Each structure stands twice: as structure tokens, then as C-alpha cells.
Length: 387
Ligand code: HEC
Ligand code: HEC
Ligand code: HEC
Ligand code: HEC
Ligand code: HEC
Ligand code: HEC
Ligand code: HEC
Ligand code: HEC
Image (tube, helix red, strand yellow):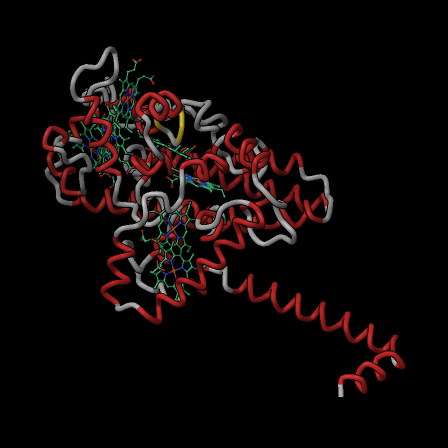
């Protein structure tokens, strides 16, 4: 039987070779398609389907996170860099599938509620968020970084990656995310991991209170000249800048009407709960000073309109970045466009880092967002002209 097959192959060697090549290419193609498909958040959603945040809602919480906005996907964090790291993550996926079939709902919830301490190790975060950490990983990763383009992670080369994403080098800069904070001093002196402070960075946004309390564990009793709880401005530079209405190039300074000498007010006039550990005021706090209940509506208006504008700009941002990457792939000269885009992105983050959707200083926040819109429009016009 085998002999007949071999003889046939020998006689039709050309046909046989062509058929084999087609088979190998098709099979490889299908495999890569399967790898792609099973790496997409939509696939993870099959077994991590809940809404909101917390265990089981990992896909939904990611969709609303800054990493999600920036196109950093599941396997960019849940798989280590390089081809071997990718392969290992895919094997882990097989284990997930096996577990899904064999363990109870309660057991699954138990595992998801207690994520492994090293689920995403600090060095992995540093690979994207510093230049030195990136270099070390690229130099020590065994095997090739990538065979075909499977995800963002394997392409990350700093400083280029972080600059285009408008990010600081967290070990070099001590003004990060709008806060005055020296990472290298704290991480190295106190042997902290990223997770100690950034727990829930993607999957649970409600951890800001815990983070501030974590700072106060040390900063509540006088350590040298380190800031104390009453020194809001030392840590909260983004919020200070927004209240003072300064710091964005090309947008006129516009002091907030409820901050500073003119209004004779400081942070704690609104943030009255800080001594009780309640840092975030609500709409109800407006009526502490303004008797008219209508001021709650003003709060809601400020918040809703600014939020809508931010959401719209975020969508625009994703479109422009995708178009820029397309243009880069086609070898167009995009250097100037990236610059315009990065300036818009920086200013968008200025508003986002304040975190109040315009409540601190609505006029200034709106003016900044208008400038972002103008920068993004300009980037699109520039992009049209390089094609
Ligand atoms: C077939 C169902 C299924 C799919 C699809 C699935 N998971 Fe899971 N996942 C599970 C189950 C069950 C667990 C808990 C048991 C375990 O750790 O394997 C889990 C656990 C996890 C954990 C925590 C592991 C730990 O040790 O704490 C991560 C991270 C994770 N999944 C990520 C993903 C990502 C990323 C995807 C998409 C690429 C995905 N999962 C797709 C079923 C699934
Ligand atoms: C693939 C590269 C990559 C990896 C890996 C990565 N990040 Fe990020 N991170 C980014 C990008 C890009 C942004 C910018 C998001 C935006 O546009 O605002 C970001 C933003 C952030 C922010 C600011 C926004 C926020 O959500 O508060 C923090 C904090 C952060 N990352 C921490 C971490 C930590 C901790 C880890 C490890 C668990 C990590 N990152 C892993 C790329 C990465
Ligand atoms: C002692 C607490 C602490 C530790 C530990 C820590 N961070 Fe941060 N990180 C902060 C604070 C505070 C900010 C300021 C913004 C904020 O509060 O979200 C910040 C901001 C960031 C940002 C935002 C930068 C930007 O430009 O938007 C990134 C990225 C980040 N950290 C990554 C990391 C990584 C990676 C590690 C682990 C090596 C780490 N952090 C460890 C407290 C910490
Ligand atoms: C920027 C890095 C990053 C990205 C992107 C990311 N995760 Fe996570 N994920 C983490 C970290 C860090 C933890 C550990 C727990 C924590 O700090 O919240 C975690 C925890 C988990 C867990 C364990 C259970 C839990 O809720 O803590 C699952 C499951 C999970 N992630 C799935 C996903 C899926 C699915 C995606 C894509 C839709 C995704 N992650 C995207 C960093 C990331
Ligand atoms: C383990 C204790 C500890 C924790 C936790 C801690 N700090 Fe510190 N921090 C210190 C000490 C000690 C100093 C003083 C160092 C010096 O003066 O040389 C300091 C100094 C500072 C300074 C002033 C020095 C500088 O960097 O310019 C700032 C700002 C600061 N910390 C912010 C924070 C924030 C924000 C957090 C929480 C995210 C935090 N710290 C958490 C111990 C801690
Ligand atoms: C030692 C530095 C430090 C000081 C001093 C400080 N904070 Fe914070 N605060 C933080 C950090 C870090 C966070 C977490 C930010 C984040 O996760 O984005 C935070 C979070 C907050 C939040 C958000 C809490 C939530 O649950 O959403 C508010 C509001 C706040 N701080 C107000 C204040 C006020 C008002 C003061 C002065 C009375 C003050 N902080 C002093 C570091 C500090
Ligand atoms: C601690 C007291 C205090 C709190 C709390 C407060 N305000 Fe004010 N607000 C003032 C003062 C004082 C002025 C007048 C400043 C001036 O005229 O120069 C003012 C002015 C205003 C104005 C413009 C002039 C006017 O009277 O209409 C608006 C709008 C306003 N506040 C809305 C709010 C909203 C919304 C909140 C809740 C986030 C709020 N305020 C919380 C003290 C406060
Ligand atoms: C007019 C009242 C008012 C004043 C003055 C004020 N805040 Fe706020 N702040 C608020 C309100 C209200 C919120 C909650 C907004 C929301 O939930 O959308 C808030 C939120 C915050 C947050 C949380 C932001 C986040 O990322 O979630 C921080 C931090 C903060 N304020 C710090 C400050 C600092 C520092 C000052 C002084 C420089 C200050 N605030 C002055 C009313 C005020």
C-alpha cells in the first residue's frame, strides 16, 4: 500500500511538492489564525464574562481601563515577552480550559479572588515602563522575541514605545501620572513590588483610597521632611495645577473660581472628610456652602459634559494611533504627525490625571479638551498629506 503511494509521489514529484507546500502553508496559516483568535479578549470573555469589576469581570474592567484604551491587551501582561513566553502563556490557556471543565464554580471564583502574587511580576511591568528594565529583558530573553507579529508586547522597544504613548520612565522621572512620586527611591529602599501600590491597576479602579492609605502608613508620622497628610499639594500636583489653572502650553491660564486667595479657599474646604479617611467628596458637598440645591445639578452638568468630551477624544485617539501605525507600516514619514499626536495625548492625560471630570476647574478643563481636539484634527490633516 505504502509502496503504491511512494511510487505515485515519485512519478508526480512536481505535483506532490506543490501539494505539500500548499498543505504546510494552509496548516500554518490556520494555526496562526487559531493562536490569534484564542488570544483576543472576546475569547477570554467566554469564561470571564461578568460586568463591572472584580473576579470574573476581568474583560469588562480591562475594557474601561487606561491599558485597554492604549491597546495593551490580555497577553501583553498575562504572557512574558518573547516567543517562549508567548508559547508558555498559550499552554497556560490549555490549563484554563481543562480547569473550566473540571472544577466547580466556587473553586473557580476562589482562584480568581486570590490572584497569585507573581501573576504579573514587577520586572514585566518595568519592561514597558522603563528604559533600563526594557533593555535588560530584551538582552536576557532566551529564544527570538517574535516570529510573526502576535501582540504589542514583543515590539516594545524603549524609549520609543513610551514616548509615543506619552509615558514617563517611572524609575527616572518623579512626576508620574500627575503625582509627585519618586518610584526608584520608594521601590528600592522599601523593597516594594508594583502590586503593593498598583493592586487592581486594570481590574479594579476602586483602589485609590487604599493607595492613599498605604502612603499614610509611613507619611502619617513625621519622617524627615517627607509630606504629611495635610500637605495635599506636595503629592497631588495634577489637582493643584487644575485648581490653579496653569501648566498647559497653548491654553490661557484660568484660575479655578473656588481655589486660592480670591475665593479664600483651599483643598480641605471641600475635602472635609480627610481626617476621617473619606477623601472623595460628592455632589452633596457643594451644598455645604451653596444653599441652593441647584448646585448639585451644576456638579452633575460639569461632570457629564466633560466626561462625554473625554470619551469622544479617547475614541478619536484610538483611530489616529491605528492610522499612524498603518502609515508607519507603509514607510511614510510620520515624525511630525507623531509629535502633534503626542502633544494632544499629553494634554488629554493632563485632564484625566486630575480625575474629576472638570469639577475642580470646569472652564480650564474644557479649554484644554478643545486644544486636544484641535491637535487631533491637525494630526489627521497632516496624516492625509503624508500618504
Ligand atoms: C475555557 C474557559 C476559559 C477561557 C476561554 C479563558 N479562561 Fe482564564 N481561567 C479559566 C479558569 C477556569 C480559571 C481558574 C483556574 C485556573 O487558574 O486555571 C482561569 C484563570 C485565569 C487567570 C488566573 C490564573 C491564576 O493563577 O490566578 C488568568 C490570568 C486568566 N485566566 C487569564 C485568561 C486570559 C488572558 C484568557 C484569554 C486569552 C482566558 N483566561 C481565557 C477559564 C478560562
Ligand atoms: C505592553 C506594555 C505595558 C505593560 C506590560 C504594562 N503597562 Fe502600564 N501602561 C502601558 C501604557 C501604553 C499605558 C498608557 C495608558 C494611557 O494611554 O493612558 C500604561 C499606563 C499605566 C498606568 C497609568 C494609568 C493607570 O491605569 O493608572 C499605570 C499606573 C501602569 N501602567 C502600571 C502598570 C503596572 C503595575 C504593570 C504591571 C502589572 C503595567 N503597567 C504593565 C503599557 C504597559
Ligand atoms: C509606594 C507605592 C508605589 C509603588 C510600589 C509603585 N508605584 Fe507606580 N505609582 C505610584 C503613585 C502614587 C503614582 C502616581 C499616580 C497615581 O497615584 O496613580 C504612580 C504612577 C505610576 C505610573 C503612571 C505613570 C504615568 O506617566 O502615567 C506607572 C506606569 C507606574 N506607577 C508603574 C509602576 C511600576 C511598574 C511599579 C513597580 C516597579 C510601581 N509603579 C510601583 C505609587 C507606586
Ligand atoms: C497591564 C497589565 C494587564 C492587562 C492588560 C490585563 N491584566 Fe489581568 N491582571 C493584571 C494584574 C496585575 C493582575 C493581578 C491582580 C491585580 O492586581 O488586579 C491581573 C489579574 C487577572 C486575573 C486573576 C483574577 C483577578 O480578577 O484578579 C484574571 C482572570 C485576568 N487578570 C484576566 C485578564 C484578561 C482576560 C485580560 C484582557 C481582557 C487582562 N487580564 C488584561 C494585569 C493585567
Ligand atoms: C514604607 C514607607 C513609605 C511608604 C509606604 C511611602 N513612603 Fe513616601 N517616603 C518615605 C520616606 C522615609 C521618605 C523620606 C525620604 C527622604 O526624605 O529621604 C518619603 C518621601 C516621600 C516624598 C518626598 C520626597 C520626594 O520624593 O521628593 C514624597 C512626595 C512621597 N514620599 C510620596 C509618597 C507617596 C505618594 C506614597 C504612596 C503612594 C508614599 N510616599 C509611600 C516612606 C514611605
Ligand atoms: C503622601 C502623598 C499624599 C498626600 C500628602 C495626600 N494624598 Fe491624596 N492620594 C495620594 C495617592 C497616592 C492617592 C491615590 C491616587 C490614585 O490612585 O490615582 C490619593 C488619593 C486621593 C483621593 C482619591 C480617593 C478615592 O477614593 O478616589 C483624594 C480625593 C485625595 N487623595 C485627596 C487628598 C487631599 C484632600 C489631601 C490633603 C488633605 C491629600 N489627598 C493628601 C497621595 C497623597
Ligand atoms: C467651601 C465652600 C464651597 C464649596 C464646598 C463649594 N463652593 Fe462653589 N463657590 C464658593 C465660593 C466662596 C464661591 C465664590 C467665588 C467668587 O465669587 O469669587 C463659589 C462660586 C461658585 C460658582 C460660581 C458663582 C456662583 O455662585 O454661581 C459655581 C458655579 C460654584 N461655586 C459651584 C460649586 C459646585 C458645583 C460645588 C461642588 C463641587 C461647589 N461650588 C462647592 C464656595 C464653595
Ligand atoms: C470646590 C471644591 C473642591 C476644592 C477646592 C478641591 N477639590 Fe478635590 N475634589 C472635589 C470633588 C467634588 C471631587 C470628586 C469629583 C468626582 O467624584 O467627580 C474631588 C476629587 C479630588 C481628587 C480625586 C481625583 C481622582 O483621581 O479621582 C483629588 C486627588 C483631589 N480632589 C485633590 C484636591 C486637591 C489637592 C485640592 C487642592 C489643591 C482640591 N482637591 C481642591 C472638590 C474640590
